[in-house]
Image (cartoon, rainbow, N blue to C red; front, side, top):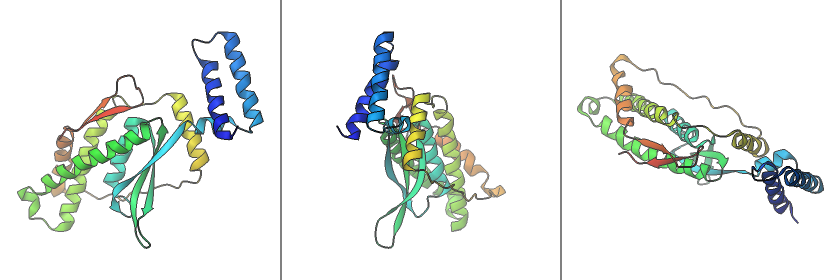
Length: 235
């Protein structure tokens, strides 16, 4: 038996040991069997927990390091589906790379997080373009447009976050599995510092406009899945 199969058997034994339907004798037997397998195959509890998690990588939609608003949107999606987010870069050629996010979680959560980001990113891009096409923004110089667009995006994301926070959260065992996976596969992560644009008085309304527009994006908790969510396009 290889280690992957052993991990599968250990997980089944542990699930049986803590299962509500097991009687005390069956639970004790299952726990003993799990410990025997762990000793025989040199498997630690951290390995068992880490095997319950997985990761998905998606492109951020920008070259190089993703801008702050993309990072914040990815964080909101990770918060909604109970996953951890890692900022990285994907090489697409000999001399070029694109920004990307890695989402770590259990079950389908990482894939759902990536899907949520892609759908919400398209909604936000559309709303941002429409905002910048308004007469009072079209006449501005490029730096002002970028600043207003970023403030609009921040307001839009804040509106989505307030919806997500109502149902976000994960069980302790899922959080433990994700942490074990991070410790095993991504032990040396650094910190990411985001550059913040200072809002000028003339651009102050952009964030409010973004917040109002962001209310049309909808995230709903999936039935029977406390740590996951179902995405509904709102625009």
